[in-house]
Image 1 (cartoon, rainbow, N blue to C red):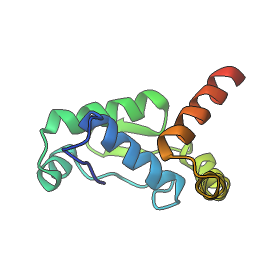
Image 2 (cartoon, rainbow, N blue to C red):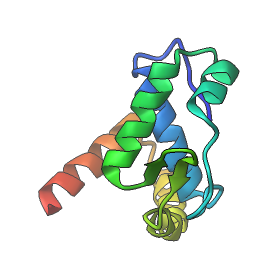
Image 3 (cartoon, helix red, strand yellow):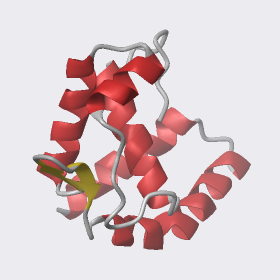
Image 4 (tube, one colour):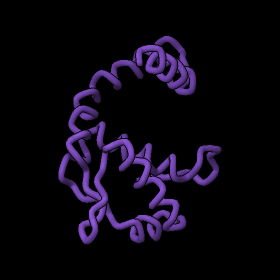
Length: 117
């Protein structure tokens, strides 16, 4: 998990994106437990509420479950993300070859996803 305090993106959003990326890359699998919010906050030097906000966003998406006494647990929703990983890597490579910036690629993906839904 990582965050960039110099980025314009909010810290909780960066943290949630980092966890999504770990799930997509297969580094997090269904049933895996995430570190406690307190441990993450200490290791990243952020407020515990920032971590809880990220965890709540991921819970609302269905990517994790928050269980009293067990903490945050990755759900089965992580499996489809991992299945897309190779496709995402290919898309990123093609975008780089075409000279597209990551921001442009992200905007294209967002627009396409909104149009398809």
